Length: 368
Image 1 (cartoon, rainbow, N blue to C red):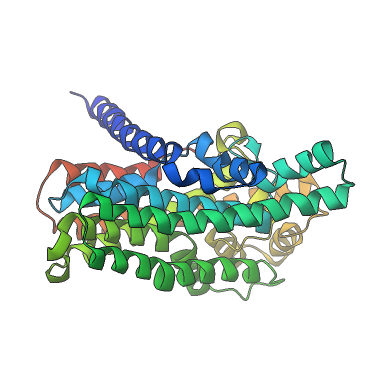
Image 2 (image 1 turned 30 degrees about the vertical axis):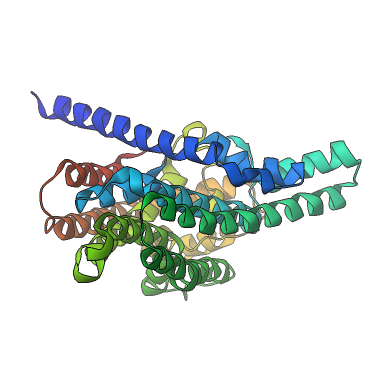
């Protein structure tokens, strides 16, 4: 079989395995009996808005595959996989407010949808309708975070010990959440910088919290559930956590690249929106390092400038791409995946380990 045919076969295999696990997770969420407590209707519908659109399911699939890679039962870990997906969703709902995004994957964001409904349903003036939309989204995100903890507790019904469930809940509350919110806060603060003072180290630290932390938790949690009471004596949960954390940085670097180079229809948001929001990506950092003073001024003019024209954003993108920043970021992302696969090589061979290899490769092959 030719190399490209083999690659296509592997990609199809991974897509099928990813879809299988994603569907299990979303079916679990859509039939969760405690959802009747999510009231009133606007909160209930807002809470399920992104659930019904079904994301790729990369994080829950990672958790389940890590459970399998250490010899555990993936189905036993299903509630934890669902918890990780809901945790991801609430961060997206709140992140969309922070970034003032009106669409996600081609559909209205929660705060944008309920802004529209505030006007249509309650005849609110524009400012009040916008406030209603944000209020619904904040409360829905808060409830989704609470739901994630409830889903972790479902593990008790699948034979996971109370001690292990407590560890999962505690780590989500006292380690994952602070680290992720630190990354989000740094992202906001860096976008306010008006010069080139944000360093590469600063940006990578921000990415470690904003994107890598949840992937690291998902892998660690999956391995912990898979090992059960043996988890305390094994290095596998931490190793798989490191594998996923490295992949997470590569994932975000690829996301930044797609934000400047992808097809808008496939991407689901305008190309260059990260620039208009003032995001301090490594692409921007590397471009400012190598561009002329005149070019730097044009990039900085477009960065975070809500009043800039589309032509200003396009010019800034062209400067960034001509600078060689995209190639530097691609190489860095490749190096993170290489390090991650080296960590993964220490695990025994299994179908789950093989799928984890494909999971890592998929992160850099995706187009949206």
